[in-house]
Structure formats: structure tokens, C-alpha cells
Amino acid sequence: MLATVHGYCFNNRTEDSLENVIFNEIEQVLHHKSFEKVRLLKNKYFNINLLNYEKNLHIINNYKFHSARIAIKKSLIQDHNYPGSFLVNIISKEDTIIYYTLSNTDLKTADSFYNTQAMSVLMEAYNNFYPGKLSLSEVIAGDIFIYGNDCGMSGALWPERIIIEEAIKTSDTSMLNQWLSSPYYEKKVYAYEALKRLENKGLTLSVSQSRVLRMLESCNEKIKICGGCIVDDQTVKYTIETMVPD
Image (cartoon, rainbow, N blue to C red; front, side, top):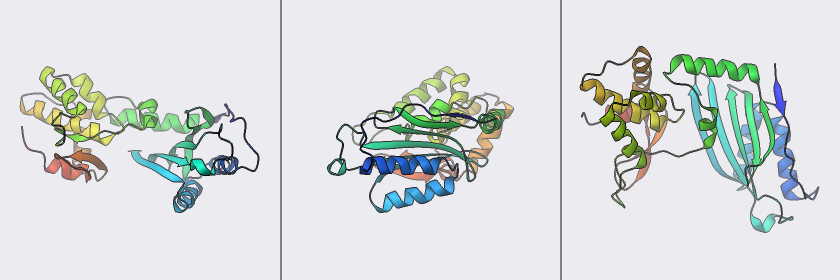
């Protein structure tokens, strides 16, 4: 069963304006439900300096999340009441798009699609593997996390570090399961570190916790890390291999 929603529509558009042409082009490509067609369109926009943000995230198995912002220079916008950019969020299984939202600058949804059956299969696979449940709202939030201790510029601890140290102090395995089950690998690595430190103090890991920790130890997904003054990308596997034992 497919559930498709077409909601909010942008107003005040000049039919032949650049912004209208781009919006229609994005919408038409999304309706094909083929990520390869989306990829080709993204490459086109990148080459003409319209793609100013892109994020790709492996969820589980062959499921991936993709987010891209297409921005139009103010000098090129013909209708100044028109949004200057569009945000596209996609979940795909291999080449098939099973979920997408197309929003404007104010995050007003212009078009959306939700394949109920395919998304249910994804949720079930994720929830069977991880100790917690997959949050769709967390997937599409587009938050940025950094794994590390503190910022070399300000000397302040990263917010994630403060939270994880408190969880270790209180042995809050419920919170750690949430982070271990997060779609963001930085949070997974924080949870990995915390659970390993607690295990060294006598905590017995659950079957699902142990399964995810083993997966992370061979995971080549890249995360943002900070060792002091520079934020860089590094694989999960290498980050875990170079962790300093507690």
C-alpha cells in the first residue's frame, strides 16, 4: 500500500521564473522515485553552484538517508516573496525512493511521499537489530554531532561529552541504548565508549548491545571528530581502535 501526500503549495510564483523552473524540475524528478535520477539532478545543480548543502547517512542494510539544499542566489530571484532555497529529504532502498519531503526555506512542506509498506520493513529491520527504536524525526532533523572531549579554541567540553559522562556516572543504560540506536554514528560511538567503560566496571552487556558494538568495531562510516582545534572526518572503526582505555 502506498500513501502519498501532496500538501502545501508555494504561492506568488511567476510561471517562467528561475525559482519556479527549479521547483518543478525537483518535483518531477522526485515523482519518478528513482534515486539515480535525483543523483543526476544533484550533480547538475552542483555544477552550476545551486547545491550548497548535502548529507548522506547509512541507516541499515541497503537503506540510506539523503538530504540536500538547493539555494538560488538572491540576485537571480525574480519574485522576492519567493523562498530562496529548497530542502529535499529522501530515504531510499538501493535506487528506490521510499520516502521524501520537499520543503521551502521556512520548512513548509510542498510535496511529500511515504511508502507505508517499505518504511514498515525498514523500521522493523532497524528495531530488531538495535536495542532502541528508529526515530524518523531524528533522521530528518539534520543535526550535526561531533565526537571528542573539548574544543581547543574555547576549552569547553562538547555538549555530547557532558551528556555521555553523566550517563556513565549514573549508569544510565536506557539513555545509552537510545544513543546506540541513533541514526547518527557520532552518538553511536559515544554510546560505544560509555558501554565499554561501564563493562570494564562490571556491567553485563545485553545481546543487542553486544551485537551493535561488534558492528561498530568494523564500521567504515565516517563521523566528525575533534581532537582539540580541528574538526575532521574519521571512520568509526579507526576511532574505536584509537580510543584510550578508561
